[in-house]
Image (cartoon, rainbow, N blue to C red; front, side):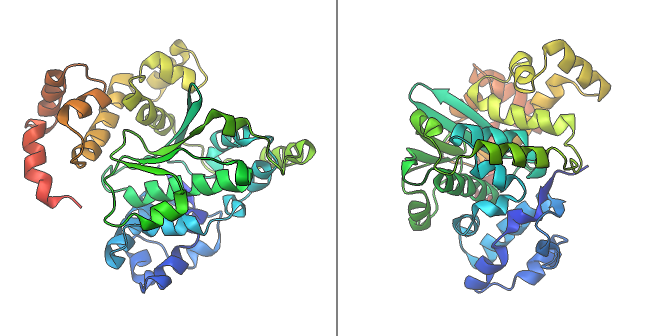
Amino acid sequence: MPALVRAASLTNYLEVSRHLGLNPHALLAQVGLSAALLDDPNRRIPVASVISLLEASASATKCESFGLRMAELRQLSDFGEISLLLSHQRNLRDALQVIVQYRHLLNDALAIHIEEAGKTVVIREEVINERPRCSRQASELAIGVMMRLCAALLGAHWHPISANFTHAAPADPAIHRRIFGCTLVFGSEFNGIVCPAADLDSASPQANEAMARLARRYLDTLPASGVPSLELELRKTIYLLLPMGRATIEQVAQTQGMNVRTLQRRLEENALTFKDLINSVRRDLVMRYLENPSYSLGRIADMLGYSMPSSFTRWFIAQYGMPPANWRAQHNGQLH
């Protein structure tokens, strides 16, 4: 079953298209969508269609910040049913936990991981795509929406340190500067936002415990519209942990809230192996990393969990029949 997302993920798509002089209907039809489908924000549509649509639209308008322009217009209410619960949380830490807990109501393909490092916090986000290449617009949309959420909840108490993107910088980062208002890091090892740890615990002005309880009770009555498969949930976790050097079966099991034995049993029940899942994510990520000219092969090897570049090269040859340097040289002119 393909990963699905609420149609609300395309909120403001039609407005941004028209503003940039694009007729969106032909592009929507190409990916099996229509303007009428977008009228129901809770309708579930394939993530792959959304990613393809955003890339095609950015290409047609020659606008590298297409996804980000959509994020700029987002409101808290665009989160749908969970927006009420989000708005009444005590602080940003609790609000982020709500997004993680109720992600099945938002987007099957969005992986979020909160990592604390001393006085700073990294909010990592990955959009998991069946076709790993070219999800720049979807990534920027996700990070832009996260930035809008944090600003909506904290107002003047939100002080981001940096916005990080694994892809290369756009020719003109003016829109990025306007929306993020902090240091921009392109060619980073992760997608997401770095902020002071204190921001996570800064009291939200709209916090209301009684309203939050009511909202949670309501959300818990909603049917989970197709709970994501074990494979997709594990792939999302591995996507986030692998570049951090933490994609061991113990860490993955812990993130899923189960012990290693339970995870191994669930894998067997689903005819999966942990080794195959790691390999599948490596195959996705290596293409994304090789497309970024600022990543050296040594850095790529490290981010894929290889302590020795020679081990990475052997793995790559086994997968693709040539060394990574040759693949990169052959494909350099064809990447978009």
